[in-house]
Length: 309
Image 1 (tube, rainbow, N blue to C red):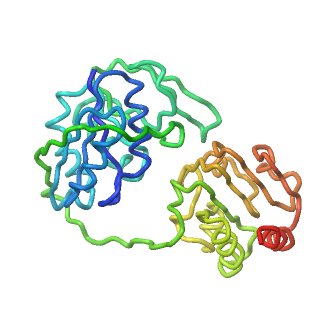
Image 2 (image 1 turned 180 degrees about the horizontal axis):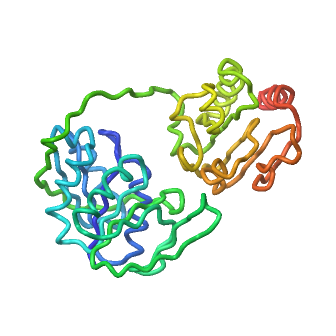
Image 3 (image 1 turned 180 degrees about the vertical axis):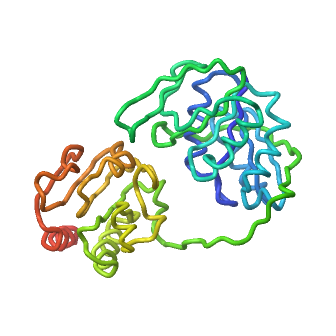
């Protein structure tokens, strides 16, 4: 069996999600190759070549791939797919964008958001906002799979794979218009080891940032938010944690003023340690919390900041 992993990167660095997807790919058995798509991404390909368990790295470059347009990625992978039994990508925004398109062109059913590889043809994925697990056995000869990175450990370094250049696809019917990048000195939410999240109980955007930003800076943490807080305008969309936001599994997750709706729990309940601060003792967040504090955040957070020095 040969498996192709489509790398997730920022143009200069391979993201941890790629290492975790390689771990899933290795569980399928056989050779694991990594495809790096982008523009000016030779450095990324060299980094991918060092991932343990990777036997070859393919580098495809074009202007369209530099923006990770789904049509261009599909046009790049499709000619390569004949040599692989499975194509895997992290279940990121990009992976969820191009994987279904690729599956449609290959006339196979996409297998999304897997959290376990049972066998080369059998996988486990969460459904119903993570309240149930579904085991899927695929009869397709070729499989297109997105992997939930938080469910797998990252593959180590130490590999020495060969880097080979392949043709990059184009997207003649698609034009890239613009993008708005959020710049922050804090860790990226999906990869952070500590996340502090705020909910609608904080009352306003000003209060949200006045409470969350100093705490995040003190802990070296990323800032997240519930959907209710985002919908209320307290925090930007890229802060949202949950079923329709980002799925995170940090070593420490601190939820402040978050009641714990099922959609939010689906995005953070795999965190190693969960701390909840809420004045409602019956809040659902306490059902998944390792440590729960029934208190007003206006009292609890300043005390925590003082304790942290």
